[in-house]
Length: 359
Picture (cartoon, rainbow, N blue to C red):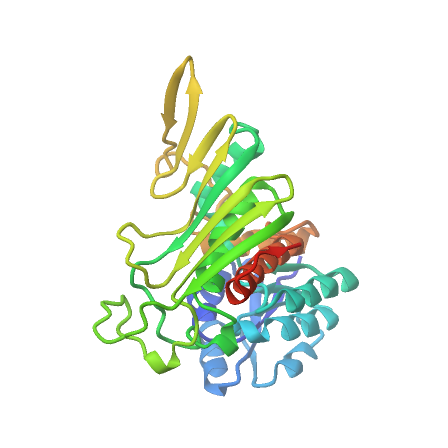
């Protein structure tokens, strides 16, 4: 089969840090033939570094979408642009991999979901952490019923001092929020995936901007510009699902929290539990004793995608391209990402109104 032809829309940090390097590793499956960015030089530079021979560059994404030879589009723009670009790409007959979160709002994410249903084209969202070996193993444990019915979980996306100071991360208009929508989205996605539960009933949320002074912040990427910091520095949510299960979501870019943990979870069932903070830990009772199981993820671990190594980003792109080629489902399905957006928006809404959000 001929290689999939891919167009990249948005040639900034996430495209250069994740999408384009991983796709280049999979050169036997795909080739990047078009690059678009509102800053033309970024598209030109990306084409030179990652593009196939004769790759085209654009500043208007609609011109890229008009190229009927392109099979797949990767949307790597700020959150504000995810929805309308994705919808246009699906309507143009392209399969779409859109960066996380799905969109700024639930309504925008729903438009993306509806467009995928209407066009029959594949849509997935960039929750690549699912492809990490540790989470793959934990998922097999959950799916096998080894921890039983899950009724309590904690989702962690806590940084002590790691505020992203580049791009538009601090801009509420462009991004829709701060750490909750940036990294909290990963933790929530992993937790819902482990639980296989996408039916929220009630959400209560709080957001804070308590560490506003940027000077002398000890931030991992240097002091931030206080005037440009228009999003929360931390956010917390209580989520009750239709079946009564409860999730506590904790997220921060800056929080006086001595033991940060990101893109991880604690899952508690009636037969056992899983803790993914640091090394994976599975707890249960056996022969009348409390048992703690520590699976090794370093020696003799399975290569979940044969021949593709253990790199999470490459594995993520591989399973996505393979889904397009074989006409099967990608790992992240649109309805799952839509649920994540629904819950995140509810946390922000509850924080603003002071009232719970009931679905």
